[in-house]
Length: 326
Image (tube, rainbow, N blue to C red; front, side, top):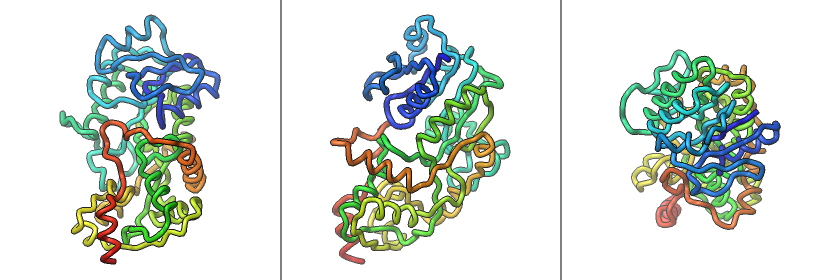
């Protein structure tokens, strides 16, 4: 079938293109053209989806049967996609757990029981929730919104897991939070990508918490996998949350994947029953980490994180000071 990927040049979108090509679809990507090319085999279209004329002009009469939307970052982008693509047989949209008004900290129960943002704020969560409503109204019964959490795997430009892999591979004493038992859940981008294509094919509809199952690992378990996979001699130096805060360490940014205790207890307590019923797979976390490390070892220079996100990782001066005092 004719399948349009909004996005398609890096990380999740790239894996979506690969999955769609592998399933025999005629694949076209629509991007701004600033972040590289999609995998070979896809037709490439360029334009700014915030411009209402850009998508119809680029399509030029080509009508997609299926859409997988990995790139919606604004209300205008959602509005324009809804206007141009309302005739699709199936539309799979990548949203976020941030669309929920109560996440973080959560916990998040079944999708229909949880309120989403209804405000006009131009922040990530409210924008995603608005996009769900806008596009969903244009494709009743044919629109699936995948509320994703932590996505990992090869081609990850956000580089949270990648930073830990590279830091642990360097070895020596490594600052870690003293809350290594905090739960964590993740979904491999390749699992999510193939599933998104499949749900678009079936015209599946509704909201789905598209992340890894609750209880799949802990932060400490993830870091131990990183140490084993990289073969480094890293030695953990656990630092209490109060000391990290006093030193100016920012959760999730300076120490990627670490959340303060008040959030960590419930942030990954997310009901994924519907995702499992709809066939979202969950490969072993060790496989995702190993494949991410193998990809990183082949990369000469990582591109900047997308959407203006800060580069993750503990600044050298903070690491030096914390190691000296612990």
